[in-house]
Amino acid sequence: MRTGKRDIYDLTGLPRPRGAAGTLTAYVPEGPDMAGAGGRLRPGALILPGGGYTHCSPREAEPIALKFCAMGWAAFVLEYSCAPHLFPTALREAAAAMAHLRKNAPDMGVDPHMLAAVGFSAGGHLAGTLGTLFDAPEVSDIAAPELIRPDALGLCYPVAVSHGRTHAGSFQNLTGGDSALWERLSIDKLVRPDMCPVFLWHTRDDRAVPCRNSLVLAQALEDAGVPFALHIFPHGRHGLATADIITNVQGDLPAVSGGVTGWPELMMGFFNEMGLAIHDGEVNV
Image 1 (tube, one colour):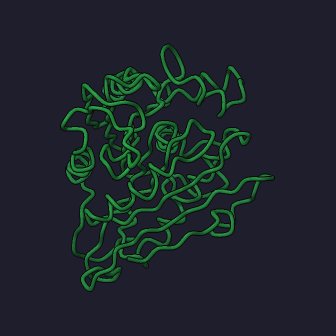
Image 2 (cartoon, one colour):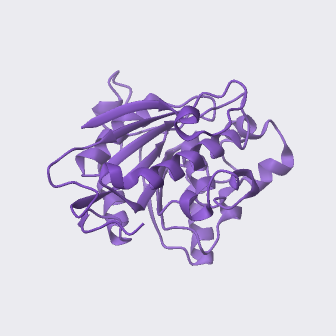
């Protein structure tokens, strides 16, 4: 496996706001049958950890990347800038990362038209804005919209709505309390018919980010005619990550629904159904 960690600003040439320090870490499985010119091509996932826009949780970083690699995908973890940096700093870093991956995908044996964004909690919100604001003024100087727009979204217990029962702290950290921006960045209000397919999962027991976030977003996706899958598991606290001992080494994992640990396979099945799968052939750039 090829791995490497780079400063996102040094890597992409993105202008750096004072104090911003986003990084992109690559996890690319190697094999003799994986090549960018005529060989087998794999999908890739941009992993966006959660942390309430205060930090990027390590439990939702490398362990998730390794899960994807084990299923044949390449994975790229973005540790994005958080508070005191406000919107659109994290979105610009995610947009630059996605555009960079798309431009360089063939060199890694990755199909540039099969790049998903997978986010957790506040990272799910970031993935949601990447999937809906890919042509917004805040990112128009970074790359063309088709380079920024993900080909699929995986949203894991996402902070998806800014109204009603949600995780207000994430929106406070992201907007600095700007009420107009707070309202604008509710993902359900940003849903658009030309966005990519979306996989959602949540637990009904989640008290930090209530499952209504995924339910409200799913309804908005349905109304817009966007393909999606939604899984609500009965039991499991917030921040489950892999939902097993890998990310809960201190024994803090309470009882969870048996199916929760299978969410990576469920997500992968949906992505495959939407056309993101390992395949043979040339890259059409």
